Length: 226
Image 1 (tube, rainbow, N blue to C red):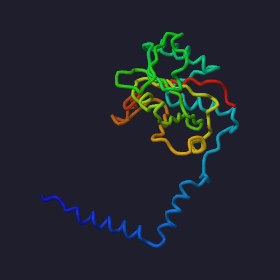
Image 2: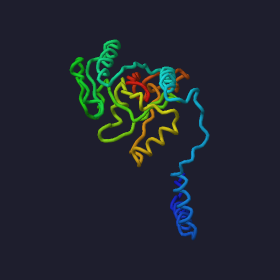
Image 3: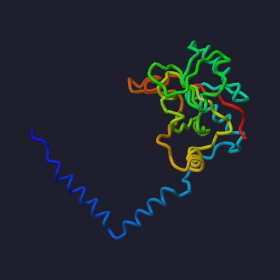
């Protein structure tokens, strides 16, 4: 059976594009589309039980745990290395990790953890990252990719440990996107929303953790909401 000739279809599609671009109202339609993308008006969104900032922390912890993340709270960022060491010891994991630049300056050596600040490779078993913000509605982390925060640190190792400042908790996904626009202006190359360990139910509808990424996600919540 001969392959279909796609050249005619391609030419027809490109001609339609040319006609559309050449229309007199093209500039107006483009301006309207761009305005729609940048509009600040939000669509319907859930009202969380207790929208006050103080209610976000317990909501986030509850939702994160339902997603099979584990959570520990500490008072200050300087307490995070000891909390990570306790977790690694409890899970029987080696005291070594790869980390993003925002997590690197903490005093890991004082608790016996060897930390390398770089992108992760296949051999790395533990990745430690910060996060841009965390979403109380769903127990989700938002990580923004950048040279100093490569996505591999949270995606390649079997264990992902995230340092989450409680002051960076927001109520909803819409709030997270608004924070990105306000603080970053332009979207980074990748926004990674992490809702617990990687999982799949493809085989006999049985949930398996760690199929396409970390099988463990541990959250160190730092401080209290402002």
